[in-house]
Length: 228
Image (cartoon, rainbow, N blue to C red; front, side, top):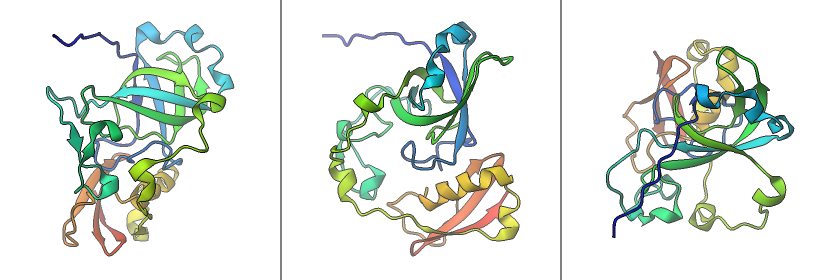
């Protein structure tokens, strides 16, 4: 029996400080200081389509893992939360390598500009998307229905996870725009390096706010070595 296929439309794109998927927080809401904006395609950039959204504080974003689209999929994946060495079922994770490369993120609405040259623009914080990610839909977050204080986190809640200490020399930090520093430091504290690697001499790097951030990781301390 053939698999049914349903077409979807890209309604817009998100603009963030990340030029690649490396460095992007592994979950939304972890680094609240990260700010982004959602811009919409002309067909959907109609002010009346957003009427009433200003009354909500948070938003669900449904999006496409545009850098992880594959023709095949694997039933098991290695989540970073387990160090990248243990395999679990793909449907027990939020891995991008899924039958359908669709992501779901909860973000905070900072402001909505209904009338810009590009149409309505939504400014959000806490996004875990790279710049230019296609947006498939947005929906308001409903606290009475979406919040479950007694929820169980499975293996993700059983792993003792701690932020790392960040050493960011002042002369290097000064190269980052002041309004971007808090967000960048929050990203680094989450240790964007692959958890299955343990090479203190290796230099990792990712693009952020027009800069390339280079760092090393050793004994729970992340040290920024260059900003290019």
